[in-house]
Length: 489
Ligand code: MSP
Image (cartoon, rainbow, N blue to C red; front, side):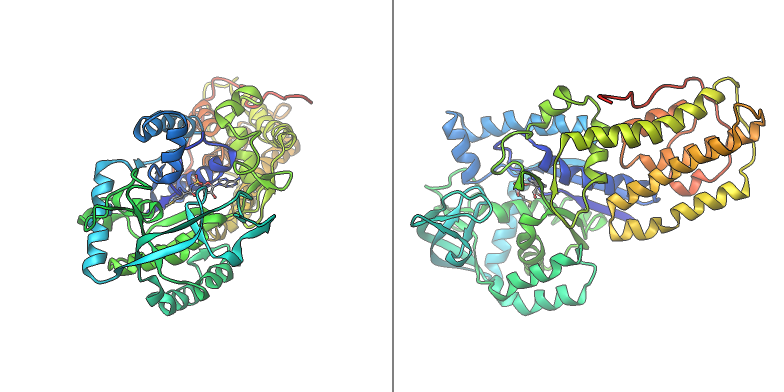
């Protein structure tokens, strides 16, 4: 089976921060985990480059929008690379191929009679690139503030084109209700349904003179396409739609933050339905990382720059990936703490994983090769630890997955403690310890890819899908490094 996993495409008006990193790391985790579970998995990420927000940021810096996004994109690519994120395509909405797909889709919707001209008067948050009804805004000193950014919204009164999404209210409601696995975690299903009740038609065009940096509406050159419609279509243009190649990928699994739930679970499936496309397979939603309760990246400016973070504090990208997955139940918001990163680094990465690995490789490197048979008792213990793996995968529970992996390493340490292979020179004991380490290191791959690949290499076994990991093989160990040197103890 092929799995097509996407992240939202990022606004490149700022450098990526640890909140942006979270969505990408979760998507990469799911991609790598799918691979070791034996699936073919492809991940898409990229940048949402059009729209007023980018246009304005570029203007403030005295740059052209294209010049600005060309400069900003490298921060995202470099960061994702540094954090070992594997994607098959990094899409930019300014790619000509993507722009052509947007025009094609808008034309198709127009021809099908889903688009009509109208006027729009309402409050607009530039940071969200979205309109808000007055009832959703915060009123302060006669000003209206965006509920997410706490910043004053703008009042716009202009001509536009509307997409008749309200015609599909009943359809989307019954789709969400009858497809229980469409939205994960399930707590977000009710929230999605609550958006449907108040759903009106969607304004999908902007006057070109106000937002020139966007795709032109193909049937009226005085207008440009609303940035969210442009952005959502990236999930299709990246896989070649409308050419048949898209069929090898679609339907997608989207990973998103909770702030963009409405667009992904209500607007997007309706848009797809209008284009005669199947809805996404699944939308996985996560909460925010906060500092003192505020969403990082929005109101909080410190700890935001991940391009500096790993240089200034702990120089181990795997430790951040580990912390993000270990400490955050995805259905809730989590408070970021650098002390928390150090704590899991010392207590779990160094003391449990690194220590087990170091002990077993120190003994094994004294032999040119370690051969043996897996002890049925060891096998049973391991199988018992990972029996919930399929559930953890299908329910998407990253922190539970980290705990399972940690249990394998705890088992390794217990086994070494019990059998004391440094006293008892039975090669089979060492073999079994290396076998447990191999399972643990394979499971570590989606969490700590850099460490996992390095350590697998040291014990002389290549990374492979979990079902092959149980096959017996010999180990050739040449080194015994400290994977996670302790810090600030
Ligand atoms: N461009 C839109 C998405 C279009 S997808 C068709 C957008 N971009 S964004 O840059 O603002 O956000 C990208 C992702 O980062 C979202 O999933 C968002 O929830 C996530 N995060 C940004 N800050 C975050 C935290 N502080 N914590 C966790 N994730 C947050 O929205």
